Length: 173
DNA sequence: CTAACTAAACCTA
DNA sequence: TAGGTTTAGTTAG
Image (cartoon, rainbow, N blue to C red; front, side, top):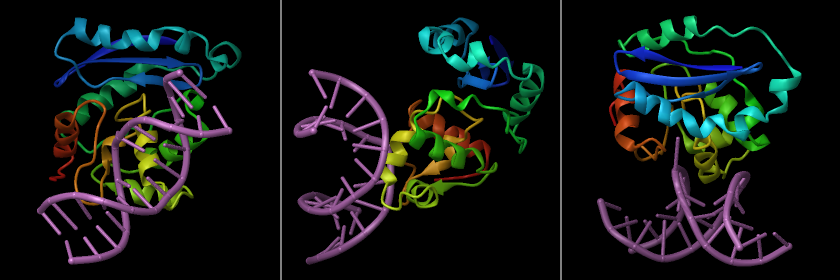
């Protein structure tokens, strides 16, 4: 497992990975220092204690290809960010929801209700909102592409940033 | 185990 | 458009 910070036009992004895939990816911060501070909560027991880290060396992960794609993303290019994810941080329900969200392509959106429908919880729109809020790998799992049926919905990192990401992808709400 | 939360959707008027 | 109601899953106690 490892961690690093990469620089894009939008700022410094902290990321970390385990033997299974990406463990966290933060949105761009204006300074290197801030990016490092935002990584701290992920570097405690939850990161070190995951059994998959110790028991499954997994494929070697190199951040360079991801860095290239993220730089392109913030230059407005419609990139595919389907990099491997460590799913062990989530409950079963969260995993079902996030895996569906993972496959939403650049520039498209779904509503919380639609996602619930597709993962077998037709009335679970609110629960879907809670589940996407547990996403640790922003952009890789594009939870900003899940919106309310009548508006933008919410976003853990602030609604302005959600609007900004959707704006990059050409979606106005 | 219950109760109190939601990043929702629906119904009515 | 505004309001109250229904809803499923997570989390705290």
